[in-house]
Length: 415
Image (cartoon, rainbow, N blue to C red; front, top):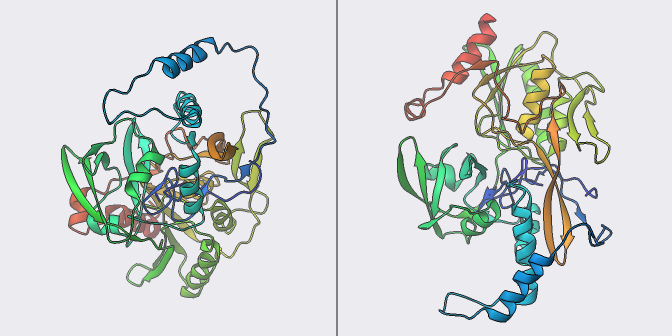
């Protein structure tokens, strides 16, 4: 998901959940979401039409804009082959893009018609790429998470990698959507990322492929009696798959459950709500879409579906690659005191986007933020685990997992 988180694929028209199919805008780099994402979950993606207000704001003077327009229109002279004289429509789109960029929100962007089509195709799940979600942190293009069993993961891309260049071209000032366009490509072709990791820069070549996002795995550790359900993305069928995994957990007789959300960039909001509903009482708040008074807030509540054996202890593993729908689920369980969060700070993808049709293009604008049941903003730094513990690169190379080990210790000893 070069997608949301879930972009879900991310007016009030239709709600898609949200991961960004990266290609979309958190974005699955080449694969799909970004934050998010292959799975489509933006935060919302309804395409609002032309019913919005287009009345000029008479309180704003556009004298300087028209002066600049007229100077460029009458005085510009092409001096070398790399410069172009854009058409009128291209200039209008450029002005909208520039105005949008002044808001400083990486998820609020204008997509001209060609880019808008790519975005909407990705939301539909039609994409080839490398299979990772990207976002912008501290003004640097950053890997949120490579998806399991994808070209990005196999090539060695890691959560937290700072992408300095794509195919030798600097990413400085590049938007997520622009990065997605560079990363996407036909199956079998290569893209080279220059990443900064630790204290050094290195080139990583990734061969693009068709991305099939893995969803979930579950197993019982007979030695410890701890059952683990690993969720890799929140797809349209994640709720059903989780139901089956939960049934297997009940059949195992275990009362100790790990929900592993590490490296899960998100997905459909509906999937997060469905899974959380097994742990929260009916009508308890799972997440709130806070519109800052501009419209009525939307509270997504538990259906109280249950199915978790009485007395079950739950630990949730999170890290910097846990974003969007992952954070919604983890935050709801943490606030409801239904689970203990273990690991490191989550990504912090907690906003809602809508798409507005602008002249055949799409204005994707952040319209709300996600709030946990306790009123915490997920976008404000992500979620802080109850028990903080790192998993270093050395741990990964040695195939050690101190975070899971700590979760097992907590579930078996109670501390």
